[in-house]
Image (cartoon, rainbow, N blue to C red; front, side, top):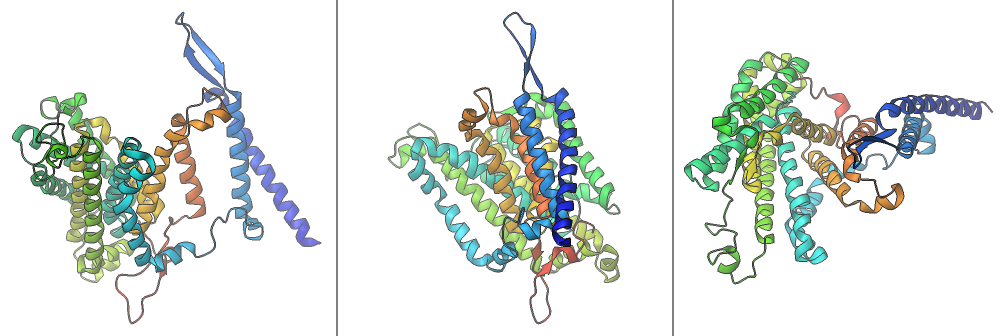
Length: 456
């Protein structure tokens, strides 16, 4: 009889704590969510009650807090309240990563064909561009930052600065000097790597929170320079009319010299989107290939040693100065590649595209996926970027919440809630186990709980 009594006491305490959290949520929602403001035809401010939204917020917080408390008390293991996947599921995926990599690569290569067959030529444009190209950009950025944060253990909150350097390098050089995209792509990466080294020198002796503050300031400095140096960057107006990449000199336009006319096809903007999709796919795969190769080289092992313990790293005779600089410069280089592609894809850039929120999203991809894991970063990018894009397609929710409900307004709210849930469920990220680069006689999987990732 003691076990049921203890279980009842646990449930009672959990309900009490969840009720208190719901009460606090109700109090916070009154000044923020309970009333919406709008102007009527007489230009008078009108308050619209939104108590249904308050009720949903209170219920979500109550249920979420109840599950969290039950999990902390151990009730989740007995009742399986929050265990969504069997134990060791992600370890299983990692052990068979080669098979899943080949399957994923095959899906990525055939994704445009699948989208065209399912959605047609008109509907495929949205899926290939908004989902395929957009997600792959963040996958590449996540893999680039993974070198700095996941492998070297250097917390970087200003990674968007290198993204901006690559974008503006391509835009200015292409527009003012008429250079080709294929020339400016490596040049943008080299310039971003140079700025990565400039950032690395002042922070050689910094770690942890101090390093994060300096890198955050660097990202903001780059953004403010782009805003205020109007003669150079155009300020808030940005740079428009950026030349687009061509297919071996063949432009994607409706002229007689365009891609469609040259190959006897009917003109469609989808051809350019498919070309950009395969271009960013190749760049992302190049990033993954270089990262995997570097991890097996002495510099990659030095990054991992630096991440685990910098003092021990120094005692082994490893030059931490060059180790940190190579991590910053190589990670920045891939950020520059992604920035150049972003600039060529958009045809217009402005400082508003490189705010701190972009750095936060990229860092969240690395942390949520599991620092040091390429698979984890890819899964996190698909979930975060693809998930937020999917919210644009949830118009059917208006049948539940009313015609005034706009799912796009709640994207960041759901995004933040999902981050909290994942961090509670998998504190070390989705892929929290990894295989060592160097091993003695036998390769063994190491739990992330046994290392100090992020404290190098």
